[in-house]
Image 1 (cartoon, rainbow, N blue to C red):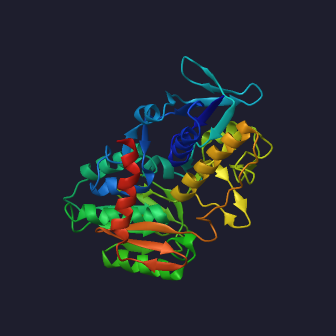
Image 2: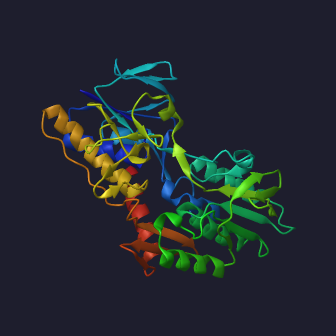
Image 3: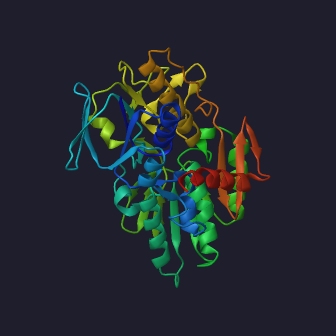
Amino acid sequence: MKVLILGCGFAGLEAAKELRNHSKELEIAMIDRRTRFEYLAALPEILSGKVSPEELSADLNKFAASINANFINAEIVTIDFTAKIVKTGIEEGEIPYDYLVLSVGAEQTFFGISGAEEHSYSVNTLEGAQSAKETLDTLDYSKKVNVAVIGAGLTGVEVAGELVDYFKYKSASARICLVEMQPLVLPAFSSENLANSVRKSLSGRGVEILTETAVQEVGDDTILFVGGKKRPYDIIIWTAGIKPNTLLQKLDLPKEKGWLKVDSYLRVAGQEAIFAIGDTAYFESDSGRSGQNVEEAEGQGKVAAENIIRAIKGERLKSYRPKNTIQNPRALISLGDDKAVIYFAGKVVTIGAYLLKKFVEHRYMRRFL
């Protein structure tokens, strides 16, 4: 029996590890277009230089070997669900499966705004974060530098904090502007206490925060906002939202808002042998809709793996219950300056938050040693 996992992020790796914990005989294969796992939750710290790319990434071949799985470095072209074959761009071409786990993640979206993709950097990948850092290093600091961070969600807030740390040693006159279309920063959390606490922290460190401000167009050196105001920039870091992975558009499977719709057992709706987890999946239950975060990705990876083992044995499947939902989110949010906030059950906690965040990061990356 062969399980094929597409995508080696938090969800995919958790599913692979859990499958091996349940079965020593099962054939497990993992496919990803990258050769290294990327710890996405800490990529903003690449900008400040607090961590190196090596500290936030790990060899997927080594991980696969550690759990007696096969890693295939390939781009996924399409999937033949009738024949149960994944078609790739490598010489081997077609890879068969008995059970399939789709965990290909999400991509940065620019909402079709003219010039945004062409003129912006993203930190949603290690390559993107490195590219942004390299550009920061080559800016002309003999003049005033203008940096715009578009999107004041979790990633945008963390990027702004790390930029302040970066410029402490580069240019005291650098201007950092954090732009958000909604009335509050961190709009997904729907908490004025959290928004006000984070805004106060970043503003106190010199970040200019523009809420209720939407980008209309990005030119070669100027941002045009809805309403006609303009702002010059030297670099833009775009953190405003994600969209479903491009692969999902090619798949004739049930979707909700572009994400794969799954049942209570994390199977793609109407499919007995196909599971979707992490950012790839749209999961909703009485407890709420799963958030697109590490906690949910890992939780779904574990339950999907357990359900594959149960299905193979002919046992009753286990329902998934989300913990970190859209309706009741929780997070560890870095603010730069070795500070962070914990948001949990509607409460904002700062004491020990950054140490906890770094502990979680270190503990996770240890699995690759």
